[in-house]
Image (cartoon, rainbow, N blue to C red):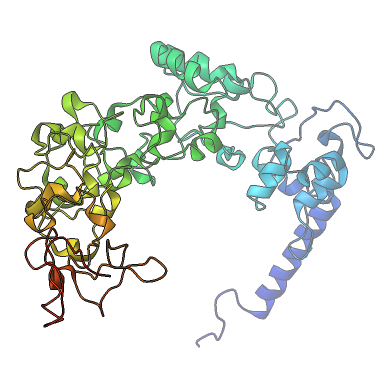
Amino acid sequence: MRSNRLGCLSGTGIVAALVTALVIAGYAYARGGLLFNPGPLSMHGDRTLSGVASHAEIGGDCKACHVAPWDPATMADRCTACHTEIAGQMRDIATVHGTLFHNDPSLGCRHCHPEHRGPDAALTVMDGAEFPHEVVGFSLNAHQRTAAGGPFQCDDCHERDITTFAPQTCDTCHRQMNAPFMTAHTLSFGATCLDCHDGVDRFGKHFDHNLLSFELMGKHTGLACVQCHVNARGPGDFAVTLQDCYACHHNDEPHEGRFGLDCSQCHTADGWTPATFDHNLAAFKLEGKHVDVACESCHINRQYKGTPMDCVACHQRNDAHSGQYGTDCVACHNPSNWEDADFDHNRSNFPLTGAHTGVACESCHSSGQFAGLSTDCASCHSDPVFHAGMFGLNCESCHTTDNWFAAYNGPHPGIADEGGRGVNHGGASCRDCHTQTLQAATCTACHEGNPGSEGGGEGHD
């Protein structure tokens, strides 16, 4: 006959299992948890906290440190209930415990303070395999072994107090690896290595300047860091280093700031020469024919500072006027064309008025002479035969530049009104009476049949 039992899952089996479990739980409770104790507690202790001098004194009271799974508290809460000063440090990021808790709140006390390892075992274990060193801002990834080849121990850097760091450690170890480099490096950037280095270095094992906004090119690639980062003692000092050319090159800048401070407008990082200069930045802008002139034509022997800017400095040997007009060429000429000259005669001592304004230059300056010409009318207008030498060379006493034949209204010998003024005979010109020369006159040209004289104007009573 087949049985209906499913192995031990019979009624009797289930009851037996429950009884066994209750017996084990009762025994464990009666023994204070020693049934599951992984080992004795440490006897180390230098003071009494909550009436306990060492963990060994609470070896039979597991619940003093351990919490039930359903309890909202944690083992760390049980630790800080006794170690109240540690609880205070965890709230202060300036302390080791505060730094650890701030960077990784999941870290528990057991991570660095293991127990149940025997009465003589140390309560603080911070070897590289256990302690999360990177949470304090310095990774040990690049510091697995010392310069001598052995593994790092805490005392190698912290001596006897893990809460402090011996700054000379870096120099001592790295000087064994490369003494010349360390000597130069500390002279340039100081001996406080942790101000810049974090164990793996912020920018990698080999620093690549081209990852920054200021890429190193041309002549800059071979420079020592300290040549640009003078007196840098930390990342902040490097970050605020000025990136403009003038900041580094002002001592050997030959232009004295006349072209501004942006050297890259003319120069490149490949070298100071050759340079592409925008002459419009200078006081002498290039216009017209000057644009195509080679630099060395004006800047002899590469002299730039103090180069004369007046026209005659370059063009004196080609001056067709032989200096007759002085040195201010721009008074007539422009940079586009020598021949396209525009002389303002009113700037001279002989302004052009009246009929003179339309006269061609060569009519007066026939020999190419400009300076020193006489401004007397007779120099161009010789005394005509008609005057018979009676008036000399003072032409403007009778004539104007508007009209040679203007009516004469001055004193006239032999013909005058009661006031002594000349009679203009209705606006008649001199030639109406003086048909040949001023020495002889006739009235009959107008007064036919009237007595008159043709000998010098006599008989006009």
